[in-house]
Length: 210
Length: 210
DNA sequence: GGATGATCTGATCGTTGTCAAGATTGGCTT
DNA sequence: AAGCCAATCTTGACAACGATCAGATCATCC
Image (tube, rainbow over all chains, first blue to last red; front, side):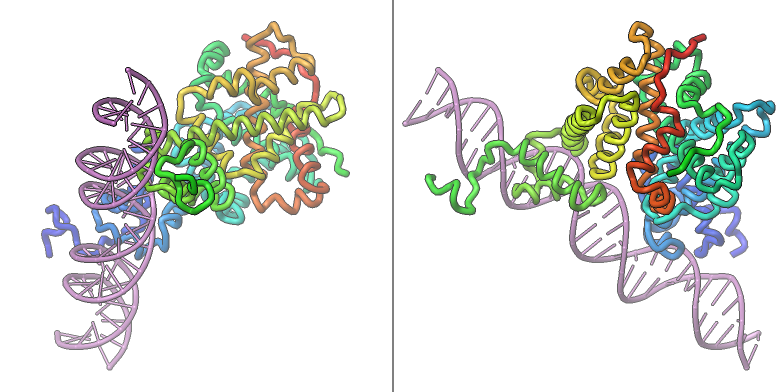
């Protein structure tokens, strides 16, 4: 089959269908949104039969897991980039939060998938914990003055910050808030105002624990 | 048909099927969780044919809307109750937040439906705004020292508080946080610790606005 | 008491997730 | 180089889903 590459005729074996499926899924999530993603649609987009994905994923949910993992990587990357671009001040936490929220606004469907997967599985992927966004938050908290030896205090602070960012990420899309957003001078100002209301920008020390 | 009430034979016309469907839906959400809710399942639970609901709701999503509205009512009620039971201190905002999160933990599927519906429609139901949970938050913020005449500052604070509560509500279910939760002395202590990390308990004044 | 409109059923269509059985092929063994 | 094996992909099927439509049933009002 020497003409395989040039004509429409795909080889019977795809080569790297797993990767192709994940990318097709990402494309669909971006274009169609979270509602229009079905296993069959992903297979269609990748140009294979509806049953083909089952040789690479046990479930539909396992495909979504793969999409989620890619999303977490992408998020961490963008947060890292935001941090490195920001001038060194003491509001680096807010920079991180703004990057987090902006990711979720630009990729709402993927963000939902990321979050649902982490919620359904018992733990978040350890990659997230070790080298991902969670780690970035902890590092930045330590920079801001939290004692890294107080593990409880650090974890509590990180969880709190994460909760705040997640909450903002999901509520900020409400059309209802657009007037307020405009009044405050755009999206980033809006986010900074919210985060400063939540006092996320202030250097903090460990909390007293019972 | 004098025996209609006593025997199994339902009257052909249900009487108040709309109400029965909403209650069947609530039951299913509590028992089966959010995944196991289908229009057909709700109809089955209510004992009618799969097509019957379409005489009371245009859509599946319209049924979910009705479920969401009931959820918002229930949430506001529980928040009001928590507020009236709490001794008057200056951490009433935290009391409110704890009630909010506990509702979402006890009714996770309903909470998700509530939130999704509000997100898909352009605005949240005005009931929520006028007499619901949002109003409670605003009132409590004013109690805590926000100037009610500064509408922007008040709305910003309310949005921030709501974002925080929502974020905590969705992340607190993570199994991963259970050790931390136990270490802090149970769920309520955990929630209070998070909220205090976010500085939600402190009387606040209006934020400076550009 | 009979017509009218609301309500419910039954059948049906297109779509989805999932599975089993068969076709096809890359790669290892000899 | 020939042949076999296991991985991969397709075809066909099944149950369940959301949605629609024609027809059966009932309450209500003139």
